[in-house]
Image (spheres, rainbow, N blue to C red):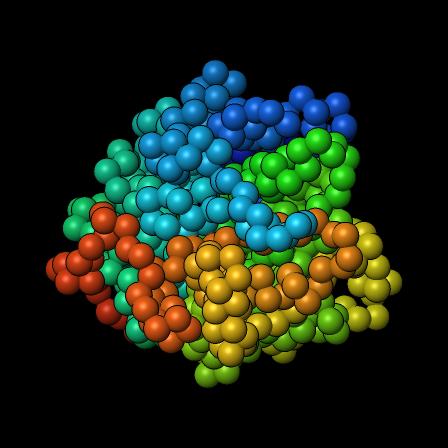
Length: 472
């Protein structure tokens, strides 16, 4: 299996090359030359596999430069009950007939990002040891990617992490998870701006090929294909649990969406042949993606126009992974994608695909529908879910559940992807229910721990200077 750039760079690369590289040299994102197809016989064979074995089967379709025995061991080492709390790893919880929550937040940092990041940490350590090399990971986080990456990479041989985050924009718990880490290979950079500023810095550094090569810069954001690939697995796992005794039955997934990585993994699963009816994209007040799927216009907001909300991990107005979907939408026309994302978006801050014949066919061909949730919706959904089902959900999952209920059709099986545990957004839970959510014992008093973080301006050069100073 070889990988290509969404913007047409002529090089074709194997998995382990793009694992360590992140962005393609032309600024594009990597995708496989084709999506492997699964048929009913394959789905039947996979249905009862433990999660680690299912992960191996799916990943082995995309990875041909890691020996199968090693890849299976990496999957088994990653997806364990000790790390994720249950044998199922991602158990379903039925709220009512045909409506489920898929628990993705039982890992070390209580967010769905652990599902991929724990594997990514093991893959990095494996490949770097095999090459005898080191890697400096540069990332951007709106809340959960940072802690998931840092907990996955702390203590890993040959890896340093430089994680940018928007100063003051994460919840107190999210900040404490990251900034309390004292490991020498973990560096937190609080950028005076919003998440999109952090993401732009990561891309700018990655696009400086001389700097990238000199300091061995890699990424853990969902622009890294390996991370997105790992997320594909839980769509299959959720489908199998929801269709026990009903092989071939279609399901839909509702996904809280900011950077388009989580739902893009669902897009990949559907393109592979998983029987997915709809991919329901839920945004918060930062509704760039909902606007696109309603109108065909993709319009990036400025930092000043990016709302600070009670589902802060989705306070994003420039969705990096969206380029992967547009690449497929436009028939994999790399030249056109390069013009849109490499030129027009930078110049005008928007593009319009409403006149494209393919856009009118998006719900049928790709399954996407969308909706929006507000702070008032989140509070109402949290209260209603707790009152009726005794289930406490976080703010982002509430966005997904609210839009799922709006878009769900009669008889449709709908799986809402849980994105984090409620303790990460305690202030809004208190506002909704009048009490603090339960806190896992290992995180008692985390907000009072000493912090290790550097505040800096939203400057590419400032981040480069920090990396250079700490890689000497």
